[in-house]
Length: 108
Image (tube, rainbow, N blue to C red; front, side):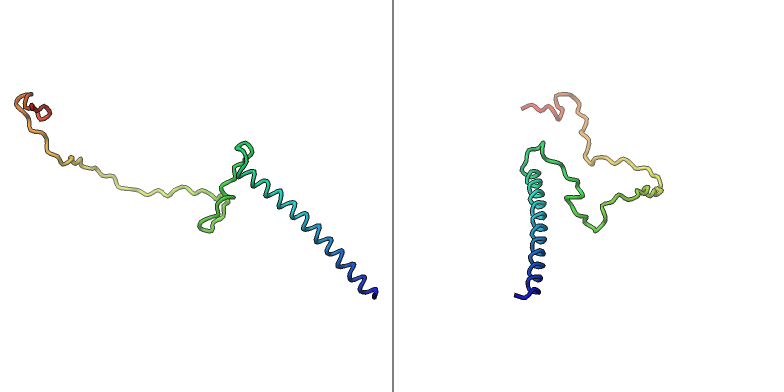
């Protein structure tokens, strides 16, 4: 075997070992994240942390979730007027001459 092939193979091996350690650390991170999410979903209420609404919902209109200056509402002048009181549209009960003929008391 030529020395160039050995050097090339050693470089490949070190590159694969580095890649292996990188993937191992990413796998450990993802396992920890999965465990935290399972605890949030399926854990007891004492173990759960409420997530902020901004983390749960994306903006509907593409606006940023950063607080903006609140401008005072625009005031519009409105002319005052008086409203006439309308009746309810029903006729009044006719006055009865005596209490026995009251519309609420009917003899059967």
